[in-house]
Length: 380
Ligand SMILES: Cc1cc2nc3c(=O)[nH]c(=O)nc-3n(C[C@H](O)[C@H](O)[C@H](O)COP(=O)(O)O)c2cc1C
Ligand SMILES: CCCCCCC(=O)C(=O)O
Image (cartoon, rainbow, N blue to C red; front, side):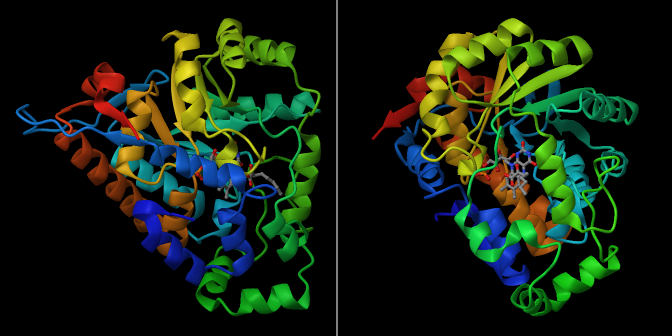
């Protein structure tokens, strides 16, 4: 896979992590065709160079979901990040805070959201609607109590599909490691040392009542079983009525769903195919973006994720109608490779490339990118 500007980070992450974690991050569902298509879609668009425009100062600041960020880039919610490096989710949040960008805290965060919030970062809690609604209400109350005024409802995980790499590695059964798995963990002593120092028996610490000594994957399976596969539009309306803050729906891939979510009162949408980890084969997010942007017509802000690996990818997504993008695997690689510093470097790398592309396209700020739209682009 083409890891773009982050190839160095992903290589280092693969060296540092036991294989089953590296594969968990990198892998996708079934034949991984969606994952490949996400990248290929960005390859279809060029940014047209323009000169004789004042680009002596490039401003990457943007507004999305009623928030202001220094870059049009958000750290996507990632489960189990605390197992990629001892700095865990707090390290990533610290890096996000330092760079002035936002971050989603996964329901499957190893660190409880309260600890992540203590970094002072601009966070949104990623939630599911659980079969036990009291559990969902509890997540909402905790998010509110620790100062988060926004939530992200993930809607593309009614089931968790086969991910062949995880099957091969027995990832979902890690709670009782086999001899092969144990040998794999022991071959990565610096990673193991970090985990031992961090508590040795990690929990999905973000979900009250699901921690304990049975091991992280047994807990994760229990939580996955709580995700309500019967979720429908009425439940979105229930969530809208229950949660007074910003509500963003993640996993939108069809204009009709975008319109319906906006009508029910969602404040924002994330066009996402979960980085190719759910539906395979699905269309690339960049390919569905123009129709969705046209359908919602500016009524709600759109963020896009899945396959962003270059500054040019970000500029293309903004020109086609997104207000910001989010990155998943790149920050996981940065964290695994170098903790909080690694996540910061990933953001710096992307910011530098976005700035390069905007300058050479004669677009000094994000408003100019959005105003130029397709006029800034070339379809190969
Ligand atoms: C390791 C990993 C864990 C993830 N965990 C979650 C999660 O807990 N909740 C969620 O909504 N999305 C989750 N995602 C999906 C991301 O939020 C995001 O949609 C995706 O990573 C974007 O694609 P990219 O990795 O190509 O940037 C996860 C993705 C990865 C790679
Ligand atoms: C054991 C599978 C749980 C999946 C939750 C995290 C996630 O969304 C992912 O893509 O991985």
